[in-house]
Length: 424
Image 1 (tube, rainbow, N blue to C red):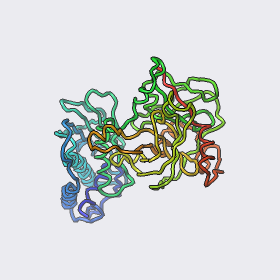
Image 2: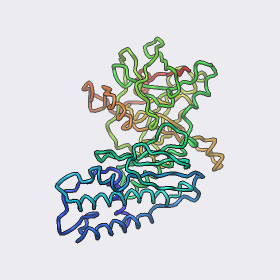
Image 3: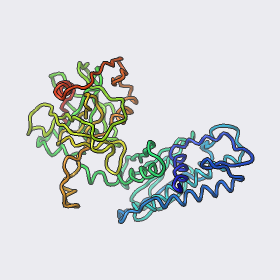
């Protein structure tokens, strides 16, 4: 129960959706409890934040790096429109802004308690749109807009691109804060533990054909989904989509979620259907389709089967599914299908067995990852792609056959799954 108060505060912090209908002059609300004075409500908030830190477990050994955490100062929080409704008094606005500001400081304290970094330096600023990094190795900041919207970011010293810090809003209580902390850790160390990005380049020796991967057609007008790391460093991407080699246009590339959107100039007869069912179960059967080990194995789309072994990825990253279906170099960007042939994910990575063996003495088997189709939908919607789901979105098609055989699913999938060639 003592953790609940901080999580309620944190939920306000992370979403900035405080709806303040105007405090009754006789009491002040905090965590659905009425307090006779604003000072009593603020004292309760401080106690809730402080007691919640007991629920944050510390890592045994931090990374040997420092971090600078920049949060908006009180005046910035106050000016960002924290009170959304009613006609509040100045005291009421200050009350909400103070709780939010204390919550931001509480997030920094949670980072210190988790012991991820060897040193955590916290500063406050009115403008947090693009804070500067000092002598620290990492920068974490909360960008607060003039309309009260907010997003956490981080970047490493020397990097030009910023990374999103993800928060799983589907979880309850302290799990939301833990998902934020896990996302920080994931941004630091994912590259050390996961094979995927740039590994396909090892399979080709040609000075021009740098790498290969997999993609799949997602609409009749030629849009194609794949993984970001398949196309990230390519001068151009080619495929034999229409039985003739053509160069595809790169429409968008999302490094944070490891997704990319390509476009063929020609219409496509065959394309995938995305699932709209977010209730993916552990143990659900899946089929991975891709062009594995190009140049070594058969030059055609290959099929592997398995199950969903976890509904989250490394460090409980809610964007990913963990699957047992075997994948190899070249599978990246291929569709992950459910038992009805609908796309529930995009294959993006496999666990680095060599590295894990080095640290644990054990060789992991069939620990692979796909980013969920719900994340891919965000990219498709942003670019107004006319894709189709099992409820008939787009062209209105809704006659998705249930209970297909693996043979039927494979026959359909190989028609819209394509090999991508990266040229440098």
